Amino acid sequence: MHMADIFQGNFQKRDEEIKKLLRIEDSFDLIRRRFVIGGRQAAFYTVDGFLKGEVSEKVMEFFYKITPEQMPEDFADFLQQEIPYLDLMKLADQEAFVKAVLSGMSCLLVEGYDIILALDFREYPGRSVDEPDKDKVLRGARDGFIESLIPNMALIRRRIRDPELSFTLVDIGRSSKTDVAVCYMRNRVNPGVLRELMKRLRGIDVDSLTMNQESLGECIFKKGWLNPFPKFKFSERPDTTAACILEGSIVILCDNSSAAMILPTSLFEIIEDANDYYFPPVTGTYLRFSRFLINVVSIFLTPVFILLMQHEDWVPHAFEFIKIQDPMYIPPVAQLLILEVAIDGLRMAAVNTPNMLNTPLSIIAGIVFGDYTVKAGWFNSEIMLYMAFVAIANYSQSNMELGYAIKFMRIQLLILTGIFGLWGFLAGTVILIVTPLCTRTINGRNYLYPLLPFDKVQLMKRFFRVSLSENEKLNHQSSK
Image (cartoon, rainbow, N blue to C red; front, top):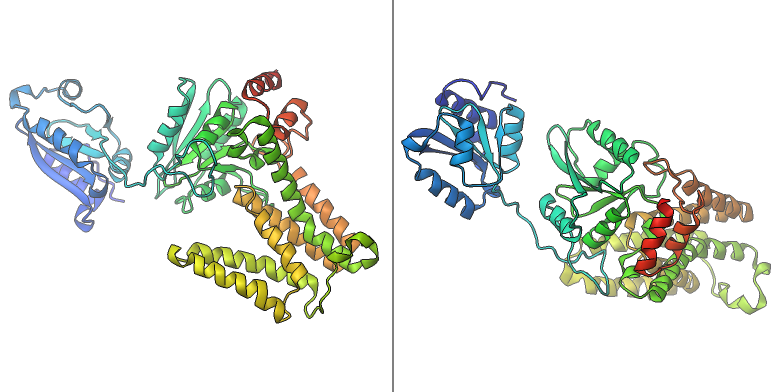
């Protein structure tokens, strides 16, 4: 980067140094506008795509009305008396100047003043705050986070009108300088966890956060990448995020990302869904139990089926119908593994297929995999039925990372059962239990909290959807 000092020398020299520093002549989206304020030369530097035309027009109109007699000698007086815009700051550092311009702020250089002024009337391109496709609810709010940091913070602030709500800004990445906001309630957050998180964030030394929050998460947790269980809870819903903040959690918002990263979190907190709280307690408890049961069944259904096919004499007479009746040309384990991959292939195809072709693709895939493959002898109808249940069960909870963790645990259990039989099934079950037991959150707490360590109050809250007034009492008892 050009290292000449842009805060020393006359106006002409500083303007030329800024042109070289920003390489304005090489980038047509960078704007340099020369004009006169009160008889003094001035220049604006900004990015065309972030410029909010109406506000900038009003500010320029005000500048043109300033007479030479109104221009003070002291820059602080100039700020206090003449600038009509509220959101502004003084820049006395070259790195801060570059970041301000490339972030979309309009930086003003005025002849005779050493300090450069940054005015923030930028407007980032963005979509509307529609309900996220993945975190839909049957009742409740229909807004969702977008890719701009400030509107996302406003959606949280709209729900928590408390001065204890704090947003701490950190920029990460030598090239990207990505804005990352850490959100928490100052009177409810664990101070030790907050200090540890801020220490890790400020210690990150990377060129850029290429994949936004995924890159950030891998920088925060540098070890344990073989463990498939998610260390964070992601949500695109402002109401869910605000509820977690009020419970004492820390939320990380990353610029250019439409999801909030919530931590510390446990397995039981990840399984929770917003629909649990938009229905009465009885209905919410039923939804929570059914989701938990479906996830457990989706892990053990196909491995138990393979185990019973290896020992058909274990099948009770009343359940003889579960046996495969048609001839098998491909071993059942191989069929199940092929279908595990095929389901993901269909999912990726649906993501990359234009919306107008999604329905025809689904019909073709259903006919081919559901009928022709059975008739051709590739798969047996019983195995297709069980895998259909597994595929549907993957969508019973909104956390995609947890869905893939369940999938990987099922595959390892399936392979071990297919190779080693009963002993493989037992070994796979032990791995399934030990993996979350050995997982730790950022505060060192067990991943299965409140089961381990046991907390009766919080465990009741995680399994049973209680009334909101009772929830307040449980939180108070747990804090004691």
